[in-house]
View 1 (cartoon, helix red, strand yellow):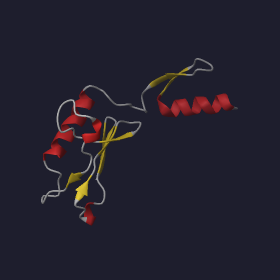
View 2 (cartoon, rainbow, N blue to C red):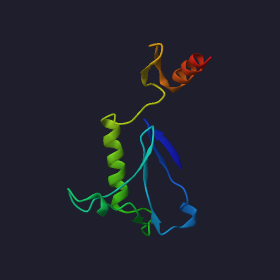
View 3 (cartoon, helix red, strand yellow):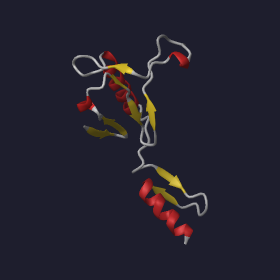
Length: 112
């Protein structure tokens, strides 16, 4: 299953292999971050949990809902990079471009 919602990708794989543990990765339009759950507010990162046990219902329990809430919150706050529509200015010629496609085309023209 794969879906992209305003820069966030939700993808599952390996479900048919019946793994007993799962990790969740959150994609913000540029890179992936592992979902990490802290045991308490202010805990050191060394105590973060990034591997979660798969339950009998094939979910990772309440953590899955919390992760989806986090993603929805990030979407609401527009904390993602929309590479199709972001605005850039070329550092060489100062021409403004919109989106990754125009940026690549502008770079190709500058390289000629």
